[in-house]
Amino acid sequence: MDKQLLNSKLPKSGLSIFSRMTSLALKNDAVNLAQGFPDFPCPGELSEALYRATQDGYNQYGPMPGFLPLRENISKRIQKTYSVQIDAQEEITITAGATQGVYSAISTLVSPGDKVIIFEPAYDSYAPSVLVNKGEPIYIRLEEPEFKIPWDKLEQTLRTQEIRLILFNNPHNPTGVIWEEEDFQKLISLLHFQKPLMIWDEVYDAMVYDGKKHLSALQYPELYESSIVTFSFGKTFHNTGWKIGYNIAPPHLTAEYRKLHQFTLFSVNYPSQVASSYFLERNFDFIKDLSSFYQKKRDHMINLLKQTEFSALSCRGSYFLLASHEAMQRMGDIVFADHIVENNKVALIPLSAFYHDGYDPHLLRFCFAKKESTVEQAVERLKRPTF
Image (cartoon, rainbow, N blue to C red; front, side, top):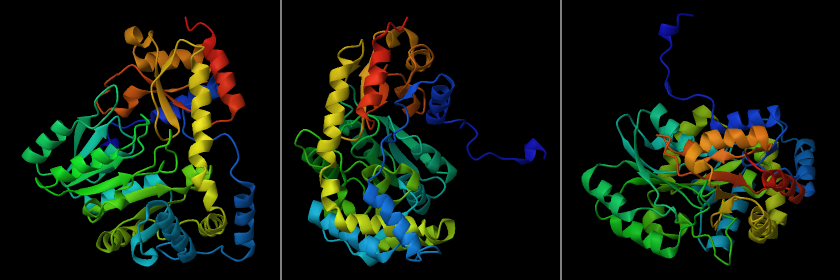
């Protein structure tokens, strides 16, 4: 094929940092703390439910919006967790994981030329999803070291530019920052300038620490009426490979979302949906207990890192934390991460990969959704001299 005939929609995109670091981890026999997935099994009852679903005959196409009992159980979960009534029929759509849910939401809401605010550091699928739909990303850096939204910059942007969509991530990957009540009130106060559409990536909503409770966009009617909110079963059930998530949106946005959903996906893996429904109905406390489960893992990693030359930042949510190392100041985080995986045999993610322009705050992302033995092995290797 003549290469000139191929007009790439993402000409600047290559192998993702996650794929690259995982490849280096395999090559160097390294402990992989780079990719965000648990290395422990999902609940046995969930695996049994999957087998049961296949035996019960749920092996063909499922309904386009998703298995209704699953959506009803999600609605119950939202009511119990956030005291919000969500219509299972009209407001919940099952997705093939959160990344697909966000991509399809962006595709639904963004037309050529639309401006989309993305706060950086940002999950790496956001900007490509906007660019593929010929939108224009407007990047705003979160303020270091707390990685809070720079409200003055957001206000200036809303005053001076016509914004179609804003992407929010709470709890935030990769920084572990969570939103407080004052953050929501500040955002609401800015909406008198203009009222853009919003996508809320809340896949780590069950992982908030130190006695805090996750505050969801679902709880704020003045936000929810213009929002699509994305969640992930893969994060909550320790089964990221199942690729099951869900989007919640008011009926008028759900109707538009499903117009695209029916032609790009139609039906998510049916037995996995049924199994998730079986499990969710009987194990609500499993989700409720996730915060304490992961807080222990977070604390364990932070305590162990004190034995190394790494300095951990605070983490209030998600299953990631950031850490600094003096050597990164002179080397840069990508070179340093490559050095660590090759010499210390531990794979980590350089934070500059989460910025469109390669901005380097000299931080690495650690995933602590791992067995204690995995984290202990990694830290033992990090205790060795890095140079």
